[in-house]
Image (cartoon, rainbow over all chains, first blue to last red; front, top):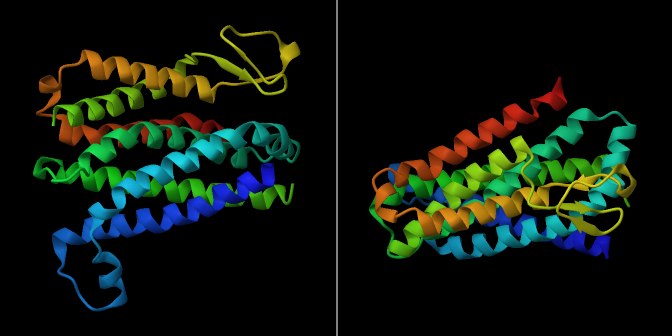
Length: 154
Length: 104
């Protein structure tokens, strides 16, 4: 059960990484450049508003599955980190915990800022919230993979 | 638009409340994972260490919901767009500062 849920958590995280990275680059590109034909330009040239509902669902799902897995982390992984005196590894997980909570409670504001028709007054908020979520998702993914690598197969 | 304002107020208040909750350990409840039980008051060491994160999150959601109902949208309409991203950035920086104890 734990391994299945961990695998699901990881797979959804990868889908979320793709969606939020696309949106973050697309929302930043709108101000400064027109659509081009290069890979980077095409990557940035998507409609960022199209991702918002999917991102809300993915972020909520990833954090919910993470919350279900959390007691197993406390019982299995954390004692191993403490036994190895890996304080920094514990610290990066504590940061992941706080960032996840902040990302979760920011979802209503993020969803509202991206609702159609887009309100011009929320332009900076859309960029800011999207980049905050993207940074949190990348941090949490890297920390999650790092801790799984340290602990090894369960 | 009014509903959007309320959602944004919820997020802002919940973000601030979460930060205060972990800093002051205002956990609405504790989950004792070794016993698979929930406690509303701190229990002794016999039941093992608690997980406070669920309780901090519940505190934040409760505060956000109260804030969204109590704070009129028009009060924050002028500053809301900038606060929406500035406040979380400051709170993330605060979380990084709080957790630097692990790296010393």
